[in-house]
Each structure stands twice: as C-alpha cells, then as structure tokens.
Image (cartoon, rainbow, N blue to C red):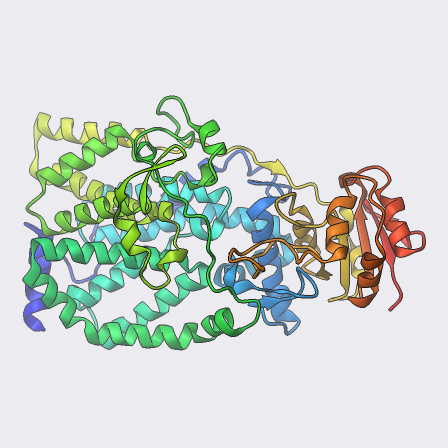
Length: 586
C-alpha cells in the first residue's frame, strides 16, 4: 500500500510530483469561482433584465417540467407529501418522479429562491450557477495535476462552458449542473493513489458525492463510470502493473463508497423501482453523434463559421444535444499536446479516454444522415452492460469534455514551464487561438413565460391545497406543457389532470402524456376546435372528483368556454386574472 502511494504520484505527474490533494499556490479558488460567475452572467446577460418573466424555453418543453419540479419539492415537503412520487400531475394515476428529470437535490437547494421569488427565477439562477460552479470544481481538480493556476482555470472554463453544459442549459438544467463530477474524480484519485486521508473516510466521501450527483440526475453517474472504465483501459494499455496495483489497493475505499451510496440512495432507488408507475427502462431513442459534430460549428459558438442550427432542428436530438463540438483548431491542438507529452502517464490515460468516449458517442453503428453504415461500434457492446442502455451515447460528450479540458490544461502548463521565448509564445498563442473557436455565443434573451395573472395572485388561494383540477389547455406533450408552469407558479397547489412526465405505457416505450382517458382525449382537442363533450368524458369528470375546471382564455380557441360549459353543465363560477373557472360540487 505504501509503495503504491509513493510510486503512483511520480508516475502520473511525469517530471513534476503531485501534491497530496492540496491546492497549488497562485490563483485562489474563490477567484476562479468569481471568474466562472462573471462568464456565466455574460453568457446569459440578455436574459438578466427580466429574470422573473423570461427564461430559455419559455413555459413549454423540458424547462416547464423543470420549473414544476422546482415548485413541487418545497410544496411537497412543507405539506408532508413524498417529493419523489406525485399525483399532482397526471391526476389521478400520478407519476414516479424518480423516472423523470426530477432533481431533488437542486430543487432543495433552490427552495429558498423558489418560495419567495417563484420557479422562473429559481431556474434562471441555476442556469447561471451551473457553468460557474462546474468551472470552479474543474479548476480545483486540474489544480491538483498542474502548478500553473491560469492553465488550470482555462481548463476549468473549457469544462464548465463546454458544448455539453451550455447546450443542455437551454433545456435540461439538471444535466448542465455538472459541478459534482470533478469532485467525484478527485475522490477517485484519492482512492487510487493520493491517500490524503484514511481510505474509509475517502470512501464515505465518494459515496456521498455520487449520491449527490444521483440526486441531481443519475445519467452522468453512468457516464462518469464509463469514462473511468476507459481511463482504466488506458492505464492497462500503458502501465498495466501500476494500474492493477492502484485498482487493487483501492478496494476497501471502493467498498465503503458503495456501502455509503447504498445507504444514502437506497430509498430513492427503492422508490424508483418499487414506488409505483415505475418503468422497466426509459427506452429513449438512441441519440448518437455523427463524426461531423466534432468539427463543424453548431450555432453555439461565438465564432467558427456557418452554423448548423437548421440541421439540428430537423434531428430528433435537438440543438441542445450538440455537445460534442471540439472544432478543428482545438482538435489539432489536443492531438499535438497528446503527442508532445506522450511519455506522461496521465496524458496517455486522458488521451485514451477522450478517444474511446468519442467513439462510443457514435452509437452502435456509424450514422451518416438517416443511414446506419459500417460494422458494429464500441457502443454496441457497452450498451449491453446493466443500466447502460438508458444512457444516450451523444451525452458521452460530458466525459470527452473532461478529458479535453485536462489535456489543454496540462499542455498550457507544460508550455509555460518547459518552453521559452518564441517557442513558448507560439505554443501558448496557438492554443489560445484554438480555444477562441469554442467560446460560446451569448444566449438569446429567451421568451416571455406569460403566465396568466390568476396563478400568481392571491385569487389562486381560493383553490384548496391538493384539490383536483382540470386546466385547459391541458399539459399534454407534444402539443404544449405551458400549464405545468402555471401550476408551478401557484406553488404546485392543485392536482392537475395534465402534466408532462414519463410513465409506463401499453407499448414497450415510455410516454410523457397523461393516460388517454375519454376526459383527457376530449380536453386535448377541445381547445383547438368545436368538439362536443362525450358522455364518457362527463362521467369521468364526476368519477375522478374534479373540483375545479380552469380555462386560460388567451390560449384556447373561440368557443372553448361554451364547450366546457356544456361539459360541466352550468356557467362559470367566476373569472379572474385571465382565466375562467368552474367550481364543481364537492
């Protein structure tokens, strides 16, 4: 054990011995956080003038769902409900939130903002903090491997503002919040060779960190596990004895990590698989990268030539999944760094990890346009591993960005230390130019959420907490999910018949729409045309105990109020703040 702790740091560091987990002197960690926050504010500067009324994605799609989750968590906890399952959407069947993009840890952390200022402000705050905190923790991680603080900061910015993080910020805030992953990497390093504390303590901390990430979103845990596997493969290919010694010596700490994770995440995991409305698998379409995604701009960059926004709009993945872009200049720079520093074991491992994760992101077979060509690729075998079938290959760009950020930081540090004069200026200048091509463009101002005033006014309190309600237009993908934001604005006050959340379906695929009962079927189409209510819809309205019917008049077609009146059997009870409301008998 002692020999491993003594040999590995020198082998991995190359010419420079690594510290035992301490931050290098120089640019302080708080300064790195300040730089990250400033860069993130600049990224979202167009949205900042109205943080309560505008956000990326407006009130539809995944952002609407995320804002409902933000509102539901404190509401559930304060009223004694389980925040991991709910029937406050898709009433009365309900959904299992552990199979959805619910992020209970983020929802809990954001609660002091959500409760007084609302879910729109909370979501926008998380959008700003995600890249900033990821930059900060990545800088601390890289600072363990190199002494140059500026190089570590630039590598951290490359991770925190990668195409993966920035792209998912527009749709999936939980995926864009990757700040825990560098912490996990640091603790894994502590297990393998640093040993700055007793193994059992490092194992416990690692279990806590993995649990924290799983409570934000589970998929990156699997992605980082695959990235670690590729790193081990790289180690076995280059220094097999040292790698086996490191892995073998870490088993006690790894056991503590697994045990801690099982204790802390055991209940959420039990809810996921035994808490009702559970899915056998997400069975999401296998979104994959294409080779050109690595080198052709996708519209997220400040500079870089013609964008491919229109092309991404026609792909099922959407532009927000375009996280694999590296660009030709940076790709050349990374290759040069890998070749120039090929004797460093850490560079060898990072290079293998980058190549394997890029290859795996291509999916089971190479995709060119709508065609699958060539033989089976790496992902065809990886996807057969337990739980890996629920990982989208294209999202392995997260692991690739960590490897690329590491290589860039090490390359800058090496140039500053080992080169002088013109050679140093050329090396650092060339790398700076290559980094300019991945600087993200300022995000758009977003769109107005336009929530009817009723849902944010005191009038909504006339609806008793937990009362079942039918809100039109119904939140039923793929048409719209805007009424989820209205519910979130009210503090997730009522049980809504609608709602976008994954649930089991009769087919092998999961679905995000409410169960297609006669009432849901009628409510889905009535806002678009003159569809008369059926007897079955009326019967279900009574059978499910719906106490309120709410129609947002600005979002439905003419005559909808009259058709709802035909369903209910009497005129509205009152109108207020842009809605017409029926209070039914109890």
